[in-house]
Image (cartoon, rainbow over the protein chains, first blue to last red):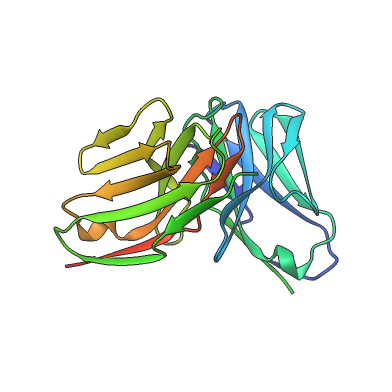
Length: 112
Length: 111
């Protein structure tokens, strides 16, 4: 497996609280992504990064923000969690545009 | 944005038979089509991909075909084995790093 870790792996939180998920890579890949996976929707892109401090929105970015201060770390923040953000979140990395994406093990988030 | 539809949502085959999963896409500008396999409790893993300048690609028991005119692409798995049981996702990319995924096909190979 590519060197990708996600933390935490499981989290339960309450509506209205802030939540930060972390993705860490040891592959030195330039591109990093955050997806959410929900039944009936497959995977949907939230945000992605094409370099340190360079990020862009994906298909479902509302309610989420990201930051990338180092090549190896990509953080996803839910400023005020809602029940609709209950999902499994996957981080992915790739060396280049339209190159193979390697996915992390996922974070299961439950917002009560 | 792009819309990717995937069928069937579930598929059961006998071991040794072939399995075919089909995806259609809406934006003719899409030019990269990866397929992912996801096992229970794990992240998706790329199994094969195809670019718009190629009509077919094969890797051992797995093949992908692309029909740009009809805007559909298919995954073919031959001589299926129990370890092929998983959820398979197709995806389409127009350019850059925006990938649009299908809703997944749960494949069960019956020994």
